[in-house]
Image 1 (cartoon, protein in one colour):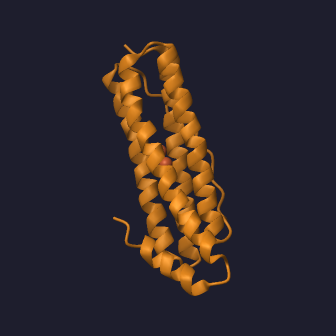
Image 2 (cartoon, rainbow, N blue to C red; image 1 turned 90 degrees about the vertical axis):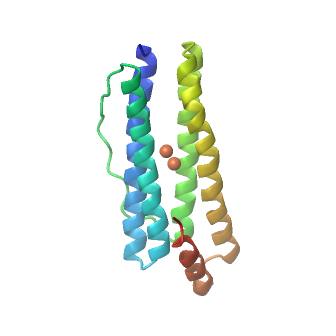
Length: 163
Ligand SMILES: [Fe+2]
Ligand SMILES: [Fe+2]
């Protein structure tokens, strides 16, 4: 049995993961429209990863005999500015998600749900990786600034190699 308080919190996290997926898909479409096909590719993979996170949470609730309640997903923005601004927003969003995951873990700890704590450790580790990869792109784009289109295109090409 899953604790009702934790079940609510996990259902909210499923919504947050789907919103993340939606946000990155919108960013991907935006980058594609700006002819940054590498950034678009990177963000589309990010969209897939976020969908997998939501499915992982759904699978966990089902395994514990819980009830999955899908909530409404807000529309993400459609415009994001320069490539640097896109990735700054990605990083800020990941930092926000990290705080949500930490809150979820705190709920699991407060409710003494040990299995949930172990399950959520995967997400805590994943967030470290997510923040690190977004930070790496932000820092590279900050180094070159907005004055070097050639360098931005080089990074775009590099990110297009993500598998
Ligand atoms: Fe996620
Ligand atoms: Fe993420």
